[in-house]
Image (cartoon, rainbow, N blue to C red; front, top):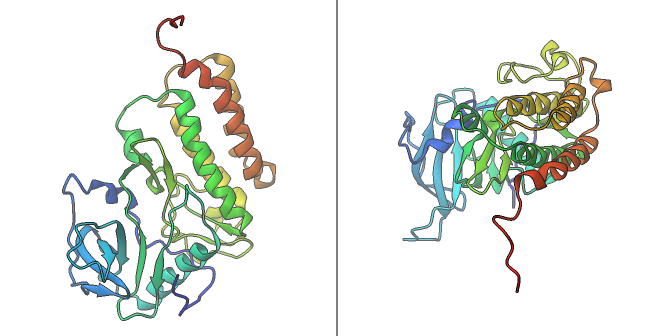
Length: 298
């Protein structure tokens, strides 16, 4: 059960700006935290550090009673190097609040959290994945149906967030993790806030993907902000996909154009985007996946 000791609404501060670096576990690119983290936090045993920055640390985790277990299936996020205790408490409370209200297969789950512990922490599933940013930067070209599929998965996660009355607030390729099977996961809820509340800071927002109205800084949060960011993500994928028919590219470009409308009221709803992505995905699926070789007659 999620901890509920501390509740402060409408927090957007992102204390893990380098989220894509979490996927560098196997590469050994780890920055060790400067302060020690307790070996036990709540009901969790804290293992080796897999990521560290001046904002947060992430350790492997397992249930505290799993003595001598070789399994470390959880990730425990702490903030040993952040001196602003109030900011930490707000961040943890915000993540816990949205985690209690929204669950989706393509949204990172918050399994436990405590803002009032001596060492505040957040517990999440351990992901064996790389960031979409790394995928895009690798230069590997993907078929258009795969790009649509991955984007649609994130759109469905956003749909669940919006239906619950929240906005993610920082949808970028850095905050989308891709598993080996193509499963996409939207992470980093540190900038999430309730709809119709006003952000107090833009320090943690990736301005390359932020909507024009969100950069103004004094407008209430709305789902259209996430839609704009997702449109920028899909636009990046169009530059990293295999050649497709002119008709198909025009259809996808039309969708992207509507998502990037300067007027947020002219952007389609997230439910409409999910439906359109499904239609586009299925319409080109047969051109990518089909029978290999000639069929044998029984």
